[in-house]
Amino acid sequence: MKQIFVTGAFDDIRSRPIRFLDEAARLGDLTVGLWSDDWIRQTSGQKPKFPQAERAYFLNALRYVKQVRMISPDASSDRPSATKEKLRAPVLAALGFRPDLWVVDAAPDEAAAREFCAAQGIACHVLHDEDLLGFPDASAGQPGAAPGRKKVLVTGCYDWFHSGHVRFFEEVSAYGDLYAVVGHDANIRLLKGAGHPRFPQEERRYVVQAIRFVKQALVSTGEGWLDAEPEILRIKPDIYAVNEDGDQPVKREYCEKRGLQYLVLKRTPAPGLPKRTSTDLRGF
Image 1 (cartoon, rainbow, N blue to C red):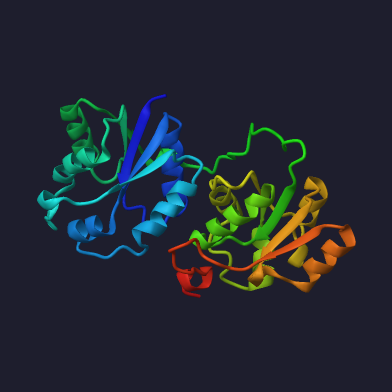
Image 2 (cartoon, rainbow, N blue to C red):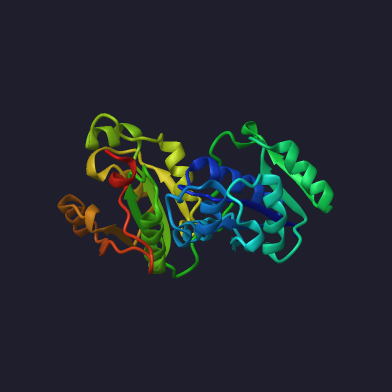
């Protein structure tokens, strides 16, 4: 497999950077050179929105990423006004190996990236906006459930996706193959009111499916707090898992009637990471 490399801050990861990593990973084994907090401060003069440990945790959870390498400044890179062209050399040195292909975003410095890669003898692949359209289904072609392994189902809006969601998926996946049912747009508006959801259902499904702990992400087809009932009947899970915020009497009663195990997990962040809520992040 070719060794593919991308680099960046990946601060506040949304569907577009995930699509970028998705397309880059189709070219080979993908290593992400993640800019450290100090690197961002020294090169941009700004503090990152999310700390490097949280950004690394999120990136490592993406099914498209093979490994994450932290890119930190050395004494020679302490130049807040340094151009991207000058900064690429220390990035390559910090990586510790020479990639076969460096994948870059067309905006805003395609020409400079190509020039640098040519000078270093590294192939350069540029991804444009038209390469990142749509939201492919990563579950297509995956093997079915392993014999004897339980099926676990979770539901939610997953509108402003963050590290807390990733941690919940990580914990729940320890109980079996994880199926995540994303609430459809009309039902989210019914439950949460105008202004919701912020992102359309196919985009939210794609982001959830990008997490390696999720076997399959689907969009619900029912209504109300049990909008995932049609999917429950089709998937036939052994466990319906929720966190404390998602614990609803109607869900508990439904599971009792259906003979499903109802699992409630405490809302705890990954070790060393701050607690996140979608409401705080989106501001409403």
